[in-house]
Length: 239
Image (cartoon, rainbow, N blue to C red; front, side, top):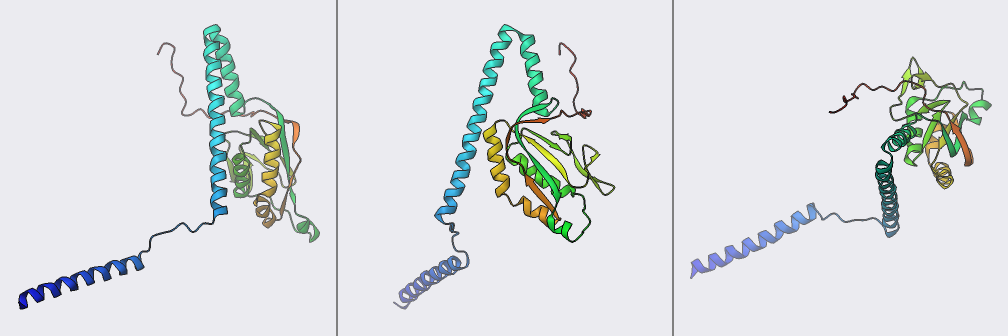
């Protein structure tokens, strides 16, 4: 009889102990909950929807290009090849750009001029941030102080001077030209740059960004230096 009572008592203590352990673990490691409000979630959903739409547009353009190329190959392989080469040159910046876009002027801030403070050149980090911000809005072509930027362009500090394509950027003021695919893209970039906080970063360095109105025609010269082809090799014909 006593043995049965001990067994029941031990079982009850085990159950109580187990429940206390579970409760303690729950308090110490609570389940993570999404505390974002509905508006924040709606904004993120809108961004994902916009990205999805852009990807579909790009896929559609690529499908049209493939179909056009296949038709041209059947009719005239030489013409198809020449047009492909020309398109590639345009994409990487080896041809002049003429189309819609806008111009940004980097100039000394009014405060630095008022107090007679010496104007320092733009730092490589700040210029990289601006170029990344521009590319985030899908620029078609970029020219910094007359220097065309391509995929391999480098922004560096050389002997205390900021350089693009190994050419020094002059002290402000200087201009940055941006080419876009359409005029609507130029207006969208204008509004986004106006709303961006990148201007505050320039203000800290006593510089000011003046973003020009979008235009239908802006001219940007082609990249005029030799492209590094260190890792590209020509395959002999027939292989």
